[in-house]
Picture 1 (tube, helix red, strand yellow):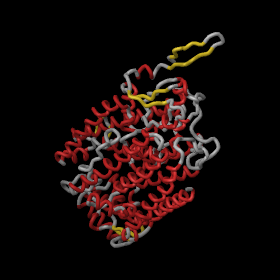
Picture 2: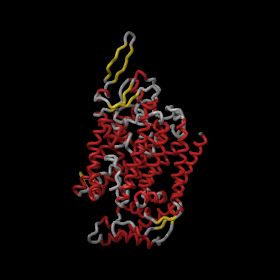
Picture 3: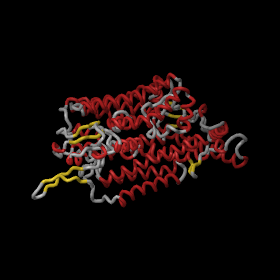
Picture 4: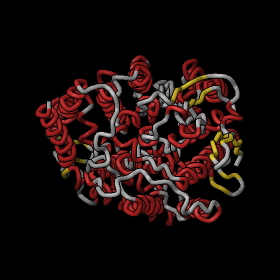
Length: 607
């Protein structure tokens, strides 16, 4: 068994090394048939720049081509600026349809992404798919399958003594998180081409820190944080660095990953009839990881029926609703699933998690695509206006966060080895309350702005440019928070970092669960032996043991109802229930037993 797991580990590491190394294979040249530009004037400027720089037909390796594309667009920008300064934009052409302006970076990215690529990956995509995806799947299964032979039940099994899963102590963790946030802010200045929105983000962050450290005054009251006091998760940091690097390339530097995209072209053509995009690559990778790591979940929680069914559910919804069905619909309608989001919808995704749902181009596409587009528009609205309150009332937020959601599914499967790293401290909970509700408000305000623009045609509301507001949300929250930090920091801060601190839909679901839901986790405090398994494995940072010791039901708005606390409890103290509507009182009243020298009495403590 140990030998199989060793071989599996070697195959996974080998596949990752090949996956990274293939980025530099082959050469690229400018595709003259797919030059970027909003009109012939911009395309002509790019063509002129190519001729002046003698770049036509020039073949450069994948990494070096990014510099060539940058040089060409900079030269084209100079050409257009000189023409504009001399005679302005031609009649009937808008200024920013003629000039490149702040979209220079977008033109560079487009020129790189549409370049003609040649090399071993393009010649042998199936070979490289096997050497990366294939070896990783085989290696993962070789490592996982022996786990089915283990005795059922959950023990800590040295999770705080592993260089992969032990986490970081508070100081290094704070340094790494701060470096990630500061790096994103600095890049935001460059990417958004202004100082205003990164400055706004900084101010909001400082306000959150003020509220938690000054207003709440929780210093000295925090329980032990979830991390090893001795070991440092150096393998965890390496895994986190790989995840962060992948998301940076995917979101902000897709021009570097054309070999990855080319590798999955044959699969894309089979499923939707078109070439792959970075989003097809991401969807495929996401689905495969959830499937393989889902099998790991089935092995780990084989003793618990609820966990098995829940794992099958997230695997099914990701594979069918988020990946295969959109591809099939796309093929039937002869359109590329990711170049045109409609009609290729993720039927389970909804606003405000799907923050682009009300963007102008999405609304136009839904309306333009006839009955299926109108259906998706109505479905999306009904889902979050009616579906969410009804389902949360009966089942809590677990119906979505733990059974359906792709973000939650990835956290539960790929992120499960790091679930114990969620910070259980009071201070972390205070940050959670401010940040997640702050993101929810930001999503609402951003959506109001884009809808205002859609119906009025004006890009300014109360002096704020709605387009820049949309870009700010997409960059800092949609990409930076949800992707870079939310997933890349699994090995450092736990697997539900995004779900706990940032997801606006989780915030919406949580508010309903807190005040109007039949769902709660009930406890039998008399049987609790204070082993701490429940708190250790709570991915949402809830100190479950403290509730169990008091005999208090758990109805925290952050609880996603994953049920792992119940699955790891050796005494059956915790149960997931959908019961009567007395939740409001149960969330306030704490029953504690006070012992004095001459009497024992029960005191109702409302503090």
